[in-house]
Image (cartoon, rainbow, N blue to C red):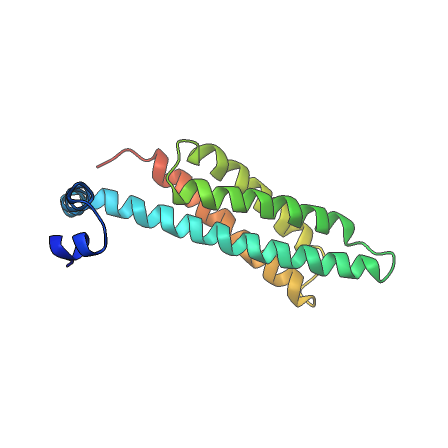
Length: 155
């Protein structure tokens, strides 16, 4: 642990140290349900972030496929782009435990379900589409789990 002198050397005030000590004590005294909620938030935010990256990669893959000639990748491209945006926003709001978690998780779960269906239409022989669909399904599940966790009454 950093001492008061260490904070002074680092240029931090005694007020900052007191605030950090208060936060540490509050964290130690939190009930287990708060820690479980933090874990749920973290799991959901990570799943959303992973899905956003997979969807962005898949959208690029679809764009390259479209550039090679007429194809059936346009709808998937658009779905992946939309899903990536929902997931990016959800990851941010969930990570900060914002007041609109329920709203964004519902929307993100639906966007992920739609994107996964689009990618699954391309079949299992397409590794990029399969990976994207899997990430979308994981994110959809994490968002729905978060909703269930938030809606369940505290014990």
